[in-house]
Image 1 (cartoon, rainbow, N blue to C red):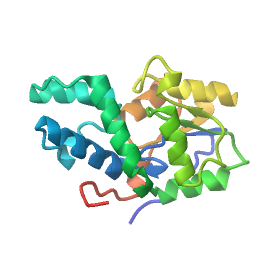
Image 2: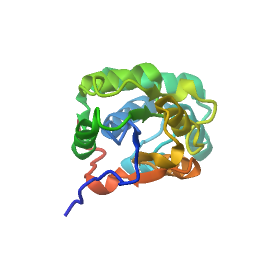
Image 3: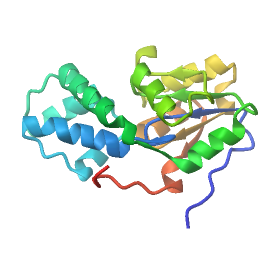
Image 4: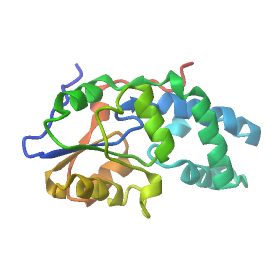
Length: 203
């Protein structure tokens, strides 16, 4: 039985990761990588994708270069991947238990999005899922110097909300994000215990 997602009684503000937390974008990211990497001779499998959870596109390409001995240009191929993702992102679905929680606490507690994704695509994701009306604070890859697992993303969210980090509850689906929340002294909640993910199925 899947447990119920709850807000910690100590929490005075909520911070949500986006991909894999509010938006079930992981299948879309998987297919974007798979479609692009075939040109470089890489068979991108769900198992391989699982080892790269929470790593931005440029970092993912760097890791694949190490693993496969390829010489892909990380920024260039990262942008190809993001363009492919944008083409198919309308197929994403919401992560219902997390979205319900955000809607429930909208207007009751300050809320922010802390994502490792690009700002424009993050807002587009929110619009597709109808979440843009629930959030006005979004900290993205362009807003920080250090990506997760560094706590900068979430600390910026706390600062923008005006709430001390120890009273912020972070909802995350990836280990880098969980590490970032803990490093920031926040309440870290892993959302993958609350819903099922299937990667690799046609979308």
